[in-house]
Length: 278
Image 1: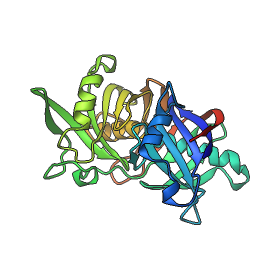
Image 2: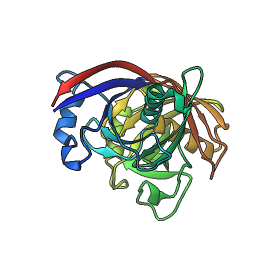
Image 3: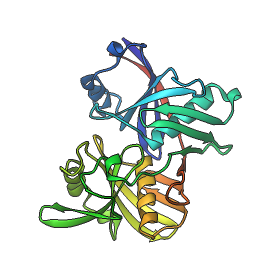
């Protein structure tokens, strides 16, 4: 089977993007095949694979599935959604710059701006621990867990996928390599969790590194940026418009507060196109 694909990236968060090879589940790539394609030495290399399928809703341009580099399917990907929006607009610009997309995490509204940046409505942040899920009896502003005898405080939110957010004094020296994988697989999170390390520069600016569930640390994580701002707002540290500085570039997050929709804005670019035999 030959797959025609695009390599896309948003803030250095890179994606393998292709149309589903067939309509039946039996023809989907399996975990081993996805892992092989994700290998940066012997495959194509990516943080996530985005697989386009026919829309289920007549209002939608496409349904997309998200797979991490370990081959596991996940619910949502903010930078991935922005790349899909940019791609669908480039295919049919006559349909307009406002798009509706579908994913396992639900419907997504997107807007491709005149300057090429792409904004996506990431929905309403969910703080109920059952939404992640997180093993906690009640919703709290902050939770605690033990990492090698050290008490760690974190905020928890679902952006369609689960996030734990830690505040650190200096993101460059944050214990991402140690705390990331330990917290990702901590028993408090039955379905694992993405782990964000947030440095608050001022009320309109944060620096962030994210250890992604099933992918490890990436240059950027769109839902991670949204989660960090949501938790920072919950803690009273941030304003409604926040610049999020990630290793791969800068995104903008707009969120007026609890119960309101959150928007993520940033670049989305095609790096190259190609084909590969599976």
